[in-house]
Length: 250
Image 1 (tube, rainbow, N blue to C red):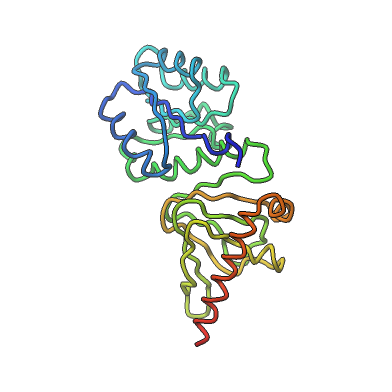
Image 2 (image 1 turned 90 degrees about the horizontal axis):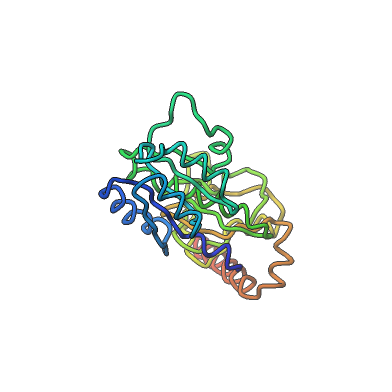
């Protein structure tokens, strides 16, 4: 996997609130793993640090000394030459400045009171935005616990490899959803779409925060030829599925 797709873990936290910085520094690694942090206590310092050592994700207080949070964000969007995801720590204003960026996922709002409950979803969206810009035949996909990866009956466009976290698969029947099993790191997800070309046969939901490799179905043949480790992972996944099916028949 390319270095760029693996290294998106550098955070700048622009906040004059020391307790907020400490909380973010504690919470973020719980959801995304390996990280490095840079701090800024005011808006001008934040811009200076981004210019000298660009991060991948910026958390900035809506109210911050020397330059308003919205002005910091506007300057970052204008000056940054590399993809950057920004989280504004504050309430969505009545007249939102960054409508297009919010729609794309490059800018998000997060109320400080919701840091502990919603930071997983915010980080997943920020990292997904960054991953889309790699220009590769595959990219990383991030889920917060409870997010739905696959819906039963949908057309299958991608296959996934779970790198971190845990997923659960459920099949819908006349008597409700039936748990088919758990998917652990190293396993393929949605591989039957690649094999038989049919629609999704189950719902797959994140049981924990997850990091996956997303591979378009039409690129998988080429990538399996290039990456023997992925071919082995696919064979091991299929073998596990067959064993589970046999166990259910006994």
